[in-house]
Image 1: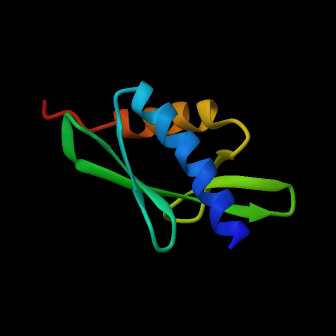
Image 2 (image 1 turned 120 degrees about the horizontal axis):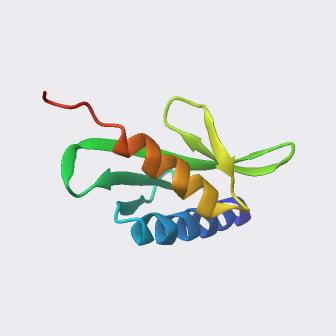
Length: 91
C-alpha cells in the first residue's frame, strides 16, 4: 500500500496546483489518477496519473507520455494548463 499512498500524495499536490490555475481536478480512487478539466470547456477532459520510474515519481498523461517530475507539481500543472488551454477556435 505505500505506493498508493505516495501516488495519492503526489496527485493531491498536483490537484492543488491545477486548481490555482482555474482547472478542476477530481481524484479517482482505483487506480489513483486525476480527472482534469477546464470548467469553461466541459468537453476538454484529461486523465493524469503518477508512476514510479527509475529516476523517481512522474506525472503521466493518459496516453503514457510523461508530463513532469512529481517533485515539481507547479511545472506539471503549468504544462497541463497549457495543453488544456490549446482548444480549437470556432472561427
